[in-house]
Amino acid sequence: MHDFIMIRATAIIMTLYTLYMVGCFAFGPELSGQIWFEFWGQTWNKAFTMLALICVLIHAWIGMWQVLTDYIKPTLLRVLMQFGIVVLLFIYLLTGFCVLWRV
Image 1 (tube, rainbow, N blue to C red):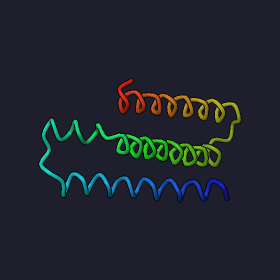
Image 2 (image 1 turned 90 degrees about the horizontal axis):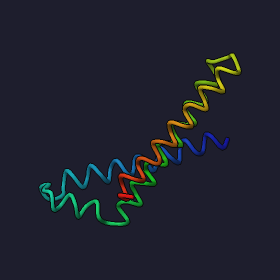
Image 3 (image 1 turned 30 degrees about the vertical axis):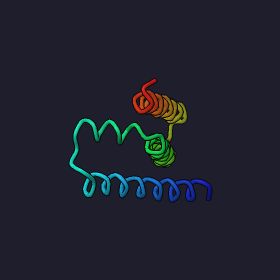
Image 4 (image 1 turned 90 degrees about the vertical axis):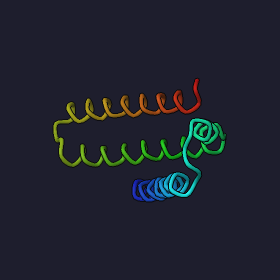
């Protein structure tokens, strides 16, 4: 039940973020370097983007865990693949954080 709720909750947040981004770029001012810099300089925008990134990673982890559990039967191979996916998702999280917050 936990995975079911997490998949739905992350999907809702990702949908809201997508609608927000499409709305900003479709109905906002014409993009220039200054507008782009100001857009990504807003703290709440960075926070919403970080939340969306975390939701994508949670969504990906649950989906990949389900696929690996269903289709990869050798335990050692499945555990190694799950570990590799966790490492990759963690790298994505750190990269997103560093790029977004310019650490």
